[in-house]
Length: 427
Image: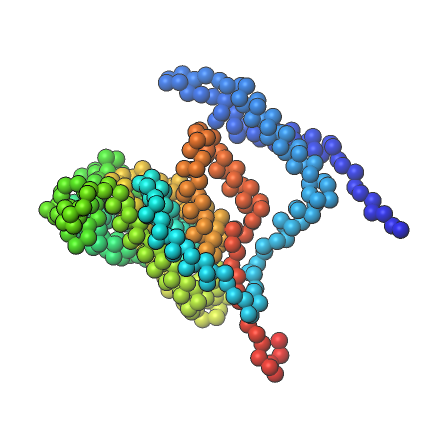
């Protein structure tokens, strides 16, 4: 009977990995956690830094030791090979979404009855990021165009409502289609100069576009209010306002129907309309991905040269991706402005673009369901980690790193249902 010879554990490698990880932790966490600002002076916290470095060294040592064991090698092999490529399902596959989606709709309808103002606000922010993630998923996930200035279209939608109200007297309902059109035009204008750019060059140009939008909003004080921002009107329904007292010549909704004033009614209304918009965008995106334009986006993502060799007009394919993705961000901007009641340029910095891009990558490039889940996770996780204070951003970063190690293709990778070959046709 043969016995399998186990490779001895290399403790020298474990020690070297732990020391290198400790040095990297000292470089990264030393200036952040070891120096505490106190007005114009600062104090050092060497003990806290030392504990953080020791924790990183211990964790890296344990991980290095585990990866040398048979179980660790098997896990590492599964992480390297699993999840690659497009998952092909059997031809008779029945998706679980056929009963999950109706269940989620029922839960969404019942949710406002039991939720308070805080929970409604958290879910509204989550739905706004779902819209943003779905729009960027068209550009990055389907078309493969790396866009780091996507927050610029978001700002166009939000300021479209604020400026339209201040200078033209536009309201919530008229701003939704106009903001979508304005953002789509901006996406089309951005798409023309970058038709021949790829990869990092495209990312730099789109990053510059987002910063240009933010700087214009910040410095054009006479028109946009600059850093002071602009107020945004509350949404109305057939002229009925949700405030305690009418501000724009309308009638408060509680006085019109004769019930007690409820401050949460505005958020319930925004939640309901936003939920319907998200369902509509999900349906449109689902149909587009199965239409020729959706297949053209995926062909462009995989190989642009082959896409052009097949006779596809790469100009229209790129412009359609930029335009549709930007219009979705414009709609999301209108809802954000209505929810916040106020807009200023600080809400549309590069961090927002990075967060939206993280939603697409974490959810899975091109995966609609994955983007929806990731949007809620990344938008609500800071609220759930609020009790950890100053460490919540660090914990969020650690969780994202672990997620990318565990699921490098995202939460839910793209799948295709197989086709049963016809009889008499060679496979």
